[in-house]
Image 1 (cartoon, rainbow, N blue to C red):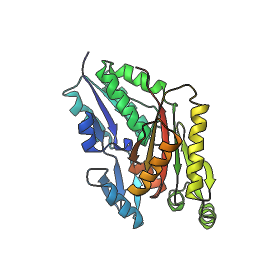
Image 2: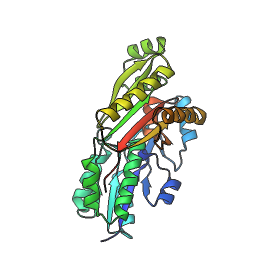
Image 3: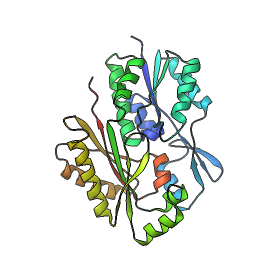
Length: 286
């Protein structure tokens, strides 16, 4: 069985240094900021991004250039027989479908693009699953099949601290943003499969956290009843606030090891800072 390389993009939240430690590769996502191009974790750090966001800079997300994607595939294929590429969910970006077209045209049997509807911390877990499957001897086609079989076995709830960025991105109307700001609402969004949707509205951060914890308990009791799950958390808030949120999750879900990571910048661009999230994904059966 040939060697299989695992490639993802920075929407997974995996940094370049973490990728080296994990034995995987990460394609940095491009951002256009004030008419200049930046690449996540290459010439754009988390701190720099949030400073630019607070300065109300003109920030837009973009998909990787086709040439950058195929160049990375070619580089990995020099030392590997196959590449498993795990980009962000096709429901949130066209980069996945574009990569699939590229793979079908010139990389049949060599590059396997996974569309398992993941983003951020759930996407990170898929990368870890793919790495373990490769180490156990599964080929690219089998890894793709296993990951996509579980594509809807995940859930994410995100509390948004400010409505400004949802309004700026056109996800809510200016009138709705103005009313929500006046009422000091803390929206809770959800990702279950393909799209980012509204889930609930809270008046306080405490209430929003309670809503998210209860929603995750409901998922465990109903959607994922009897299944072994990974539980993780994410944030765009301060490290201190993130640690407090992790502690709340641990108290609500005793016995689970909670993996905490910053939300990827593509998500942060649309929700701003001050957010916290809880997420889960089904454990892969090897």
